[in-house]
Amino acid sequence: MDCLFCKIISGDVPCEKVYEDENYFAFNDINPQAPFHILVIPKKHIDKISKMNKNDNELVGGLFLAASKICRDKSLSDYRLVINNGAGAGQTVFHIHLHIMGGRDMSWPPG
Ligand code: AMP
Ligand code: ZN
Image (cartoon, rainbow, N blue to C red):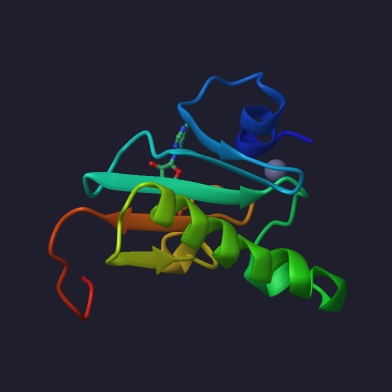
């Protein structure tokens, strides 16, 4: 499958790896929007949140646990987690990813 993030998991495309376990992989975003900008992805390829099925429930939930562990390990207490679903929402890579952004003050609502 021609997927950038699958290639990052397999090592075919280089990245700055932050975390890996049996089911998840995390790396620094190439175009960071905050001092910490990490992408957490499931190793299983799922295009987007709206394509997940019931069986993916635990896997997608685990993304948040992995993110919380990564932030704890980095002593990051305040951070924003974002998942863009679909091009109109800003999704550009169609392999589910959770953005972790932190290390600066953030306003709400986002732009
Ligand atoms: P989204 O727009 O939600 O699909 O997020 C995709 C993210 O992937 C963007 O923030 C990009 O900066 C990031 N990105 C694209 N290519 C790479 C890459 N080769 N390594 C790391 N991050 C990437
Ligand atoms: Zn993929």
